[in-house]
Image (cartoon, rainbow, N blue to C red):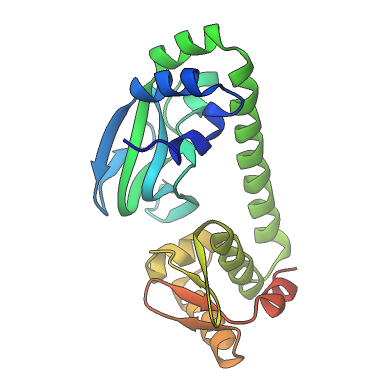
Length: 225
């Protein structure tokens, strides 16, 4: 297994090559296809995952069946680490958005390893802090931003992790359905589609199925503020 992308995860930050290689070799590799579920909200959490390829979404479902998409994760990002610091049920459901390859490390193995390398816990806490900050920003957006502003911000955020430079701008292969994109910004599919149609009419974006080309990043950034 090529481990350069896996080694980009916060779990390996600051480690020497030999130590990192030892840990990677102890991790189990999983091949998944779109629609597969790694774990469900409410299940016991006993392992950490790092995305090698593809995309994973983390979502929560309300009592009336509505789903909120908390995050879309790609290569080099990890999830499931919350159970290390607060053992208990999973706080979200992890589902494959695009055919993926992930590696997993069991909770017991991770704890033993951290006891030998306590400095790594700091990097894990920093990763949790970044995710908490992103969650706080999302909550603030729901209160203070309108739907078009949230859509613009979501597209820009996705572009920083999944964007590819093309002649016309930045192509973002987000692999999300219209419903999933709506869940990500906390709005109805119809309202999000209306915002995207408006952006397209203004020449800011071009829609390509489960991808979008950002044609005018500056305008989107101003709209996202």
